[in-house]
Length: 88
Image 1 (cartoon, helix red, strand yellow):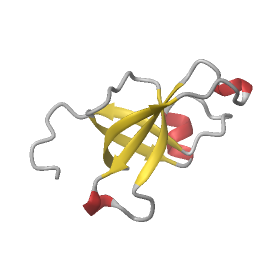
Image 2 (image 1 turned 180 degrees about the horizontal axis):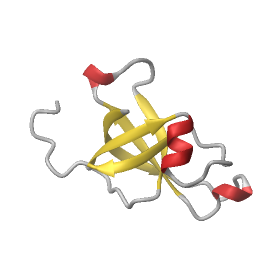
Image 3 (image 1 turned 120 degrees about the vertical axis):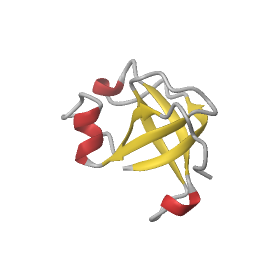
Image 4 (image 1 turned 135 degrees about the vertical axis):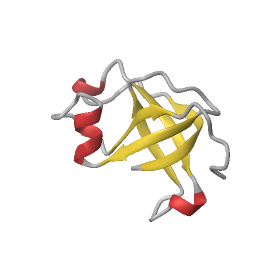
């Protein structure tokens, strides 16, 4: 699981049928948690907003955590952090 900060959103009018109705956010992974990508596109089923610190699950945990085990999801926002003091 990673911690990141929501930077923006992605609008996609054409996508896989089982992704329709879902929101996608651009997440900047905190520097000390980066294992690869500096940014991720994550499905957001919990209503995170721009500027929120979030918990992001990846891989099969993202699909299960978002309640979409059959969807092509590789990253999912699974929590909004209430207090981001000391994260950056």
